[in-house]
Image (cartoon, rainbow, N blue to C red; front, side, top):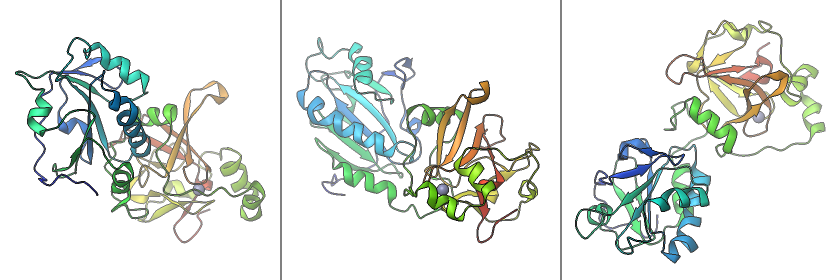
Length: 319
Ligand SMILES: [Zn+2]
């Protein structure tokens, strides 16, 4: 990416003493490993810095919106090298909610005359963007960052439908966050008309996948199928699940612990039938898949309870 820091040295561990979490509550000091195993973006600001608000935060917001759920970790640090009476810890929560940034915020005044991040990362002021690659090297450190170049990092090496987890920590909390605050970016979109779907789906496929129906429990032999392979969306053919993540839930519906990658499934709060559930859809064409529950096995603790009718095994349909 452009304007890459020339040094490419290993990112020093964070020494910032005061932090609030994604929801504005005090938390223990953040470590780099708390931001996951993928790319990490650190954004340094001071409350009274006009450039931080004019360009810094809008750029950060764009990055977070585009990269949420794609294995990127974000943290914001107020690096106070001047104006300590204005740039107070109280400003963290205020700024976090002002920009609707659900990421940890730190407050860094340093021990001597410099905030720890300025000393450790040799930053030159605020606003300041630091990008760290998955191997822990600093690949960018500057007043500005090319947001498109950072977003492009997310799609690099992300072949369609790869079976390996994509670095996104997947758990119930993440599912609820997506359902409430917006889904991960889909790999593509397919927005065919209603009549186009009707033209090739069977009435039963249409009733379930397009009209949010539910098949009878134990109505498909797919529940008992565990042969290797992939399960695609019956509507748009996007690969959604891998047989390696399928398990026997005895619920009467095909069940998976996770999708093929985090971008292919969408999550929606569903309060129909007097229940509070999370509906799952194909994130590409919005086909209704089923629901996800928090009573699944390791490693995610999730149970994706999916209508067999909404799926087809790669290459052939499963009755
Ligand atoms: Zn689909």
